[in-house]
Image (cartoon, rainbow, N blue to C red; front, top):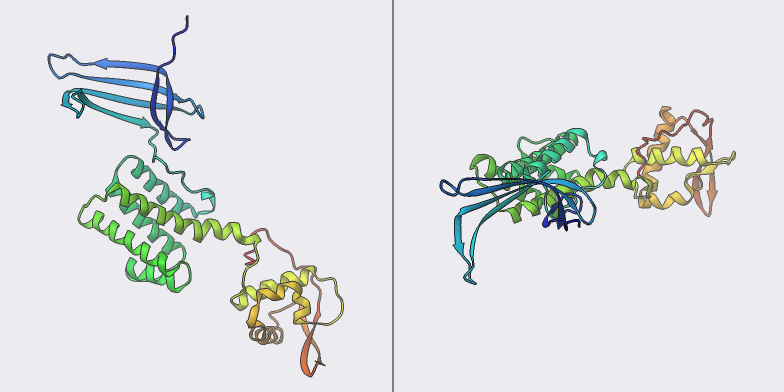
Length: 307
């Protein structure tokens, strides 16, 4: 008759929480009770939900005993699961879109957190913010000024800026005063940094297929080239006709962008349009444009079109 498998509740790195695990294999070593009595159990465990396999070490220290509120005598039990787990934390999805160095700092910070090295983890969160600033070429003589500059350049909101300053304080306390943060504070700080990475890198990449507002002439010129490439008209057309439904992306900046476009055409930097005649339509002079040869206008997979 096959014996029932021994089941323990422990962390699962896939489920990201405590689950029921069966012990597949176990080695136990116990010291002489006449000296110092403790028992070490090394176990290979498998989650009964997702079947992820891990390694668990349990230490029973029979010298550290106390009586609980029910009058039961208990002893200290310490368990460690390998690989270590940050409980109830799923981590970021799409980290491949985070620049390599920033991704490396982030993962090392998570590793420190899972090992309960909270001082190192808080320093790592601060370093992650520094790495983001470096990648975005955010200037400033210290992190305080660079975080402010992140807000001024539009990379983070004002609320996000305040939260990043909180992490700066947390990291400074850890680095300069060797002050260990509370785990609950560190968890919030981790969520803030992950929000920064998600919004600046991951969502930025994912949202490339979505249309958004055009805010500068560089984006506008890319939009024009895209519209020209998809156009099938051989007749001179107004800027609004060339843009078609993409006109909504420009908003109230059309007149400003058209002035810059004319300057680009005169300077020869806009290769695919030439100025045609001006027509009076409804009492307003409207500039028409002729579309030139677009055979060499190709689109790269890595185009940074904002729409």
